[in-house]
Image (cartoon, rainbow over all chains, first blue to last red; front, side):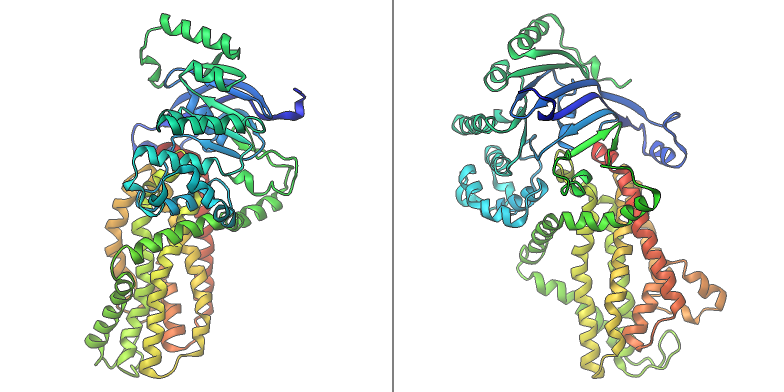
Amino acid sequence: MSSDTDVVIRAKHLAKAYKLYDSPKDWVKQQVMGSEKNPYYKSFWALKDISFEVQRGKSLGIIGRNGCGKSTLLQIVCGMTRPTKGEIWVKGRVAPVLALGATFDQEATGRENVMIGGAVLGLKRVEILDKFDSITDFAGIGAFMDQPLKLYSVGMRMRLAFAICAHIDAEILIVDEALSVGDLAFQKKCVDWIDNFRRTGTLLFVSHSTSELSNLCQSAMWIDNGRVRESGSVADVARAYRRATFVEKDNMQRFSAV
Amino acid sequence: MTNLNNRQHIPDAPTMHIVDGKTVEPRDYNWLERLFRFLLRPFSEAWHHRDLIAAILRRELRERFSGSMAGWVWAVAAPVISLTTYTLVFGGAVKLPNNAESRGAMDYALFIFGGLVAFNFFTEMAYRAPSLLHEYAHYIKQTMFPAEMLPIISTLRATTYASIGLVLMLAAQLVFTGTLHWTVLLLPLWFIPFLGFLIGITWLLSAMGAFTRDTAYLMMTIAPVLMFATPVFWSHETLGPDAKLWMYANVLTGFIEIIRDIVVFGNLPDIRVVAWTLFISFFFFWFGYWFFRRQQDAIADVI
């Protein structure tokens, strides 16, 4: 089962640095006469060294404290941002269920947002039109489809966003703590859908809840300060993570840029 | 996202493969192929994202034209009023600003209006470009949105208004002088390089504007000066030969001269002006694209 050809996501020593400029002046200086060796910016390494592989049809849970680099990692896998160092190799269409609904255009109607959102995720216009009724059904927001997004509640936005992601025939699903919004019935619908998706697709799942991880994932990875601290079975990683949470204080020192 | 483009014909290729910040190509390309692929890339990407471009454009035009009670009326009223004003004010002028004889009340108005269509198109893009990426921040942040398509979308949207002005200009000429010059057929050949120039400028300014707000202030400061440094209400042809040559350093001069030649006078434009204007368009288009792509990763991080 675990032959090398089945790998759909491979990350080797991934590292990501954000360039922090003290002022716009430094940005201009960097463009005109800066170099990598002698930069006018400070680097903040959100990811330092991350390696993992996910095989087709498997699901990997990712756990870690705020600011540990989880979101950056997911954004790299989606192709939203580029790693500075290391290798990332992804095969198949990715559906990112990240920051659900935050990306919608507030002035546009639900219908227009579906057309735009679907196109961003790589669907052709005819494909979206084909699936439109099904998306409306899944979101369950009825007549609001032709109202501007600014009239939607947070829950409704999330429903619509998830409904789009559920319809793009992705091979890889990336879910980032998104399911906490929405009522229980919709949460259950989403979890059921993800459960069903897992039979054929690959799942990357980020959550702070270790019980959610054990429900949905076969293996887990704990990221701490931009590095993989622990990986293996969900039970082992979750135990180590919980234990560490009791011992380590919640300090925000690690956000300081170096 | 670039990675999606050229991979689809290779069945077993990864959708994304990046090593040390660089996309891994399926094979090595020599410099000529690389150059060719670079020149082609803006077009292949726009084609790849055509449905997305259309979806956003459709939404924006709907907002513009049905978000207000009389959307189309406003869009048409503004150019009609300015054209009428120029006709009334300058209708009696015997000589055009370039010292040519006026052949009717409309000539002076059309002379100015032609320049104004091009100039307004340019300023609309230049004003908006520095804040363009901030305006669409919700798309760029946290989605796989191809930000390099935004300048194209924004230019195409402004094209609608510019086209209204152009059509009005032709209509006015047809109504008041009874004929159109055959050179009007060359208008698409003027329009396409102009679009390329504007898209390039927007790539450049929007990428700069993402990092520093100064770009927006700079444009606000120089645009009014540019209005007078550009032969919109006057003609550079009355200047001495040296000064006239210098006027072409202002890129808009060439575009304005050509549109006047082909629409108002029915002359073929000077081949040297055409060559220079084309060169400028190509240069800005690909330089702007190159600059934007170079900044793109950083853009997603700072917006």
